[in-house]
Image 1: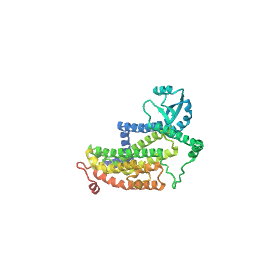
Image 2: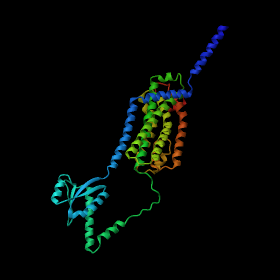
Image 3: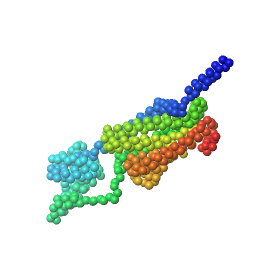
Length: 418
């Protein structure tokens, strides 16, 4: 009797120990997520791709800075002493044409021609009865030709006014005072260059992360399925815990990617002066990009995991995940094609409210400042609602397919399976 009681106590102790060792749902998901994140973040491919993306956004800021900081090009034009009155009109005409024209007095025409030949002067300009005579080394570009042509016509007009007894100065003053006044019925949209660049970069980062992390989830599922590792994992984990952990781990990986690249881009833009938007405006664009990445990832990630569970070979993965990739690609193509030229396009506005397209299109429109608050909030709510509805759909497909090897399982068959 004593032996039986001892045996019973031992059995109860073993069952208690087994119960204590069993992971809770939260611990199980966290464990899988940490494993997935640690494996991916240590991979050489991720580090190289992250470094390339950071270098790309920093290089873009530096190039943008030097292109705009370079200012107009400088041309040095030689004038004879009797033509010194041409100096001011030349500088004004050059500024209007986007160039800086500096003038230098030369003692005579021969000296000026020698300096042009030596490259010390871009051109030598001399007044002649028919207008202006220009001496250049090889050819006269269109910008300089246009500026000098305007001066020659102005000189001819002044000569005619003087011949008719008028005052060229008064005529010039009257012409300069004449202008065009524009009355707008609607306020101008703040869709300037920097907002456009920020919007395109935000959309591209989200597009790239979804196109990278989504297939990465599907590939991971297929790898575990084809190597039979999933059978060992599901001996201690429920299918939804394994799927949720994988999605969470790679989602954090994508979030790190978005945060690092966006932060590097904003910092480089602020340091180089290429990004003159207020810090609040820049931070707002980054925060919206992060929010939309999370919403988009929540929408697509579980579907990519379910798609990976349908097949047993990497070769078959392209066919099942193509329907998921298409909306992401289409939204980026539509955004980059239409947004720069017509940010208020009706089709663009409608698609940016549709959950499957919103994660890429809406942050691009938000950065441009053309989105009413109600549209951005509504689109975000719809995207999160659809993501919540699709979680059970994806989990059911994953559960019913992940242990089935061999031929590809159809979406309909996976849903119907017990």
